[in-house]
Image 1 (spheres, rainbow, N blue to C red):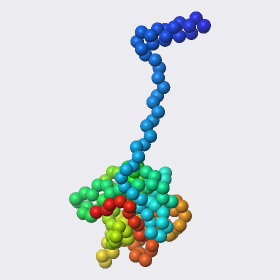
Image 2: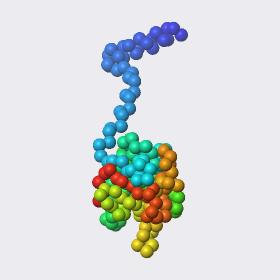
Image 3: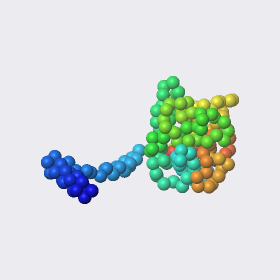
Image 4: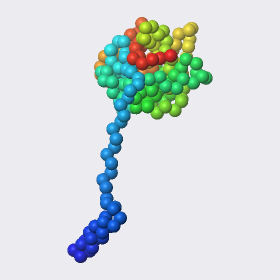
Length: 182
């Protein structure tokens, strides 16, 4: 057995000397590049920022982490005024299952162009958006039906972000983007 191991080792040494080949350790994964565009999306009621953890959107203490840095994405001509909202991880803000019903969770989901990934700003005033309206939300009497909200107006860190029926008096429906919006 020792002779076999010696021959194997000798063969490896010869191969390295002759061919310049040596086993190498795999390269370490490069760190994610820093996000240099975008900004937080801050809720007026909680003072916390929209972020994504384990795929689910929540209201979190603002950190400027990739999951909290948002920017305006694709704005297709066939959906005038509606754009994707994309975070630093390349996730689009989307509605769970694409169904716009009261209390439905909002996710960070791979951008695929489905209707539930498009949003518009309503009542933009000095950089503050009173509501983000989902494309699948319907309009009745000139008012949007479903907007981005913090579930139960919770002040808890990580409180779920959902779609909720529009109520202009609910402060948890108000979001301030720290990034340009059309």
